[in-house]
Length: 329
Ligand code: AMP
Ligand code: TRP
Image (cartoon, rainbow, N blue to C red):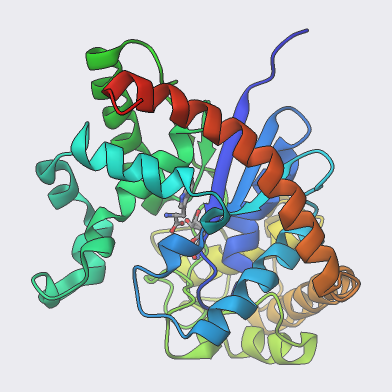
């Protein structure tokens, strides 16, 4: 049998999931299930690198799982699991801390610099070490391809470096993974500031359309979204970043491509465009939430337990090989 390529990706159960996650990440995973063996994680041990409220974390883990399922991740076909359920992840991360991961690499990570900001000396070690845990996630499964957003490319590069170093010391044990960043829609920007990424950590919720926002609230947010000077609806990232972002959202959540939308809206104003977009977004959310609401908490428990069993079998086997190589077994 032709062995399929393996995909691994994950999202942290922290903060609200929004249409940026759907467009930039999850919808791409759904497509990939057709051609690859996929493993998708809810990476809760990554989430605790910043402070989490325990009750909320518990709730978000279930929420993210339901969002994967409602978006079309098929638990029969793909493995869906909670990272903390499989100790091999943190154990391999520790081994990589000692073999392969270097201070200089981690010091270069732009996400750490951004997140730590001025507090570099006082943030937790976990935030600094986070990319090493991510490398363990990826490398445990002989992953070929890691679909991620632009901001995660550097972390996948690090996973490659760690794998290469480990392999050169102990032999070809880890497969060298590749990141894939979706081109169109790779970065959905804030509705209020097209220079900033739509983000779950933004304090102003009007910047962001959550996947669980009511369709009515989402419509209002679209109508309030900033636009650019001029009147034409054209995809121009330099001169019209706000309209370009809205066009991307329209194309990704609707059925018409950007080129088609530009033609269809030639001679029409921003007001009409936004009204139509608001309808498209509302319809998308309505359909999405119908599916989401059909999934019970019990379904989630069963699916995560099933995923844990499947993932653990793979991860544990890899970890055993590594333990032998380094001499603890
Ligand atoms: P995060 O919530 O930042 O941990 O992101 C989880 C995944 O969703 C990563 O692959 C991100 O790059 C992607 N993602 C998050 N926000 C956006 C956005 N605004 N546009 C596109 N992709 C995003
Ligand atoms: N760090 C990723 C993010 O914040 C989430 C993540 C953890 C991940 N482990 C991973 C993504 C492994 C891809 C592969 O988006």
